[in-house]
Image 1: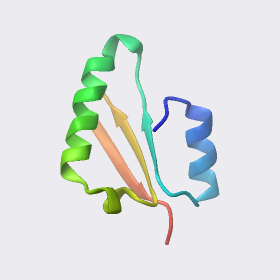
Image 2 (image 1 turned 45 degrees about the horizontal axis):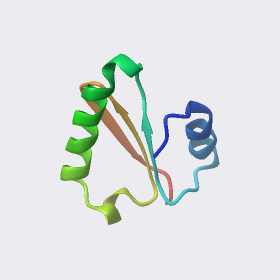
Image 3 (image 1 turned 60 degrees about the horizontal axis):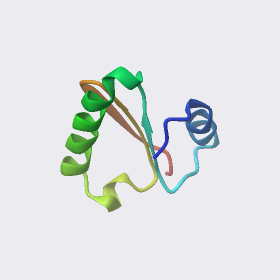
Length: 68
């Protein structure tokens, strides 16, 4: 899990990772980001997130599989 967009971009371009969750948004929205992160962690099991790139923002999230 990271807030570092550069690290997130590197992992996405490499297409190989054990999995990454990128928290995206301003510090003033951290509560909304944490709420959305809780939604992701309730919906997906750990094994479902392995090999995925997940972007969590206030009010939405995206999950994309990296490893084929």
